[in-house]
Length: 551
Image (cartoon, rainbow, N blue to C red; front, side):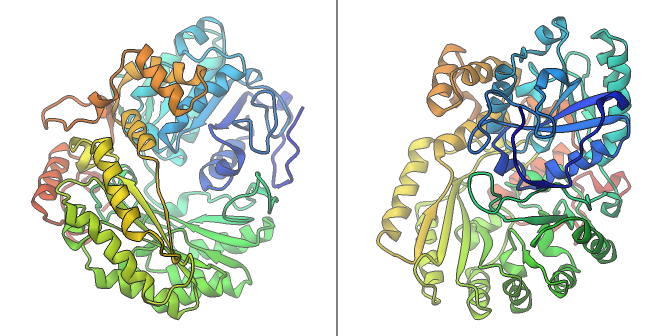
């Protein structure tokens, strides 16, 4: 049995001619997994090896009506593969990974699975780099860093381990830089790609050809091109900025080559340009113009307000983008200094004016509440700024506003901050809703604060969370399942959400990201004092990464 989804550039290999069979799993529904670049990149990289067959799996449901996770390519079950490789982009998908294993009849706990002779489970992605410990009871090997820098030693190590026919040699993988093997590794050091032009940026790109319905990507039928990796701005709440330092830009020449070849090989209608630091790419407009000259639609997920100008917005509007997403994040200039995203309200308003002037009809704004030093007037300022944006001339539902609680993340200065309690977050949300109630120009959304708190627990916890994750999977994975799981596992979620002392041992320190802990602590102290830090490419702030030879 195989899910029948129309796709371009699917790779199907003869299993008799390969040595390693990898099940690439995205622990969520198909449309979410296929919307982004990670699955397309991993799929292309693994299948670039002649000795590997890599096939994809997604969580059944919402268009994939399957009795259990089955391969998109062959319809085979997970148990037929040598390695089950999960990519964790979001912490709340941990429970889905365990659910997928249970649905496939595979024992989720690594020790039990090894004794039963089951497949090896591999995991990578930003959540693994931030903190692998909550999933350490289930995963045999964690990949810490950029996949391009890990691919060959990882695949060769997996082949060696599996050829022995015994579980013991998995321990040998702990000797490979960038791999963390629970029970064998003390620490693992992140490995990273020095030059983004060396990333393959898959050209014959795996592409869903579905335009409507539950399997359709929210971005449309797109060719995804990563033009930056990392950011370097130093926003103190941002996980991606800190775990992917330093920022690396794809050269304009390389980007144009990838577009020219990729769009010949991939039947896309639109180009999605990807990268956390994309606003600072000096050749962004050149790349946009090239896409338009080729006759394709164009989209960029988010732009910093201080990088928005009429020329850029005009290019995006010509490419068919109907709404620009910008993230002030902090509600006031004071709060933006605390998070190290210093800009005044006029910059935000000028960006929104450019949106209207260039013909777009809508704008989306992101704000964070529950920040250190936040006062009642800061929360009220969200209402004032949003109304000021709407008053620029936006029509019905022209201003989308996403309000999200601060989730303290490992390897950021706010890892010590703690999370605002649920009652406070709810009171802030009530005040914002009340202030904007009845205004048809404004649409409010945001992460459920209960889900945000769960995300924080899974970000900041250790291996003791394994029992709760397994129970939540057994009970269905919803919020009610989590409450029951925490109760039965005797875990108090509030214990993970408190402020931490600077000298306290942190579970995620089994990973060596490359950042100086003393620098992170100084950044936290600067945040509490409302002091900014220049971007890393303006003035070296000794975070520790660049001193390793990149700059």
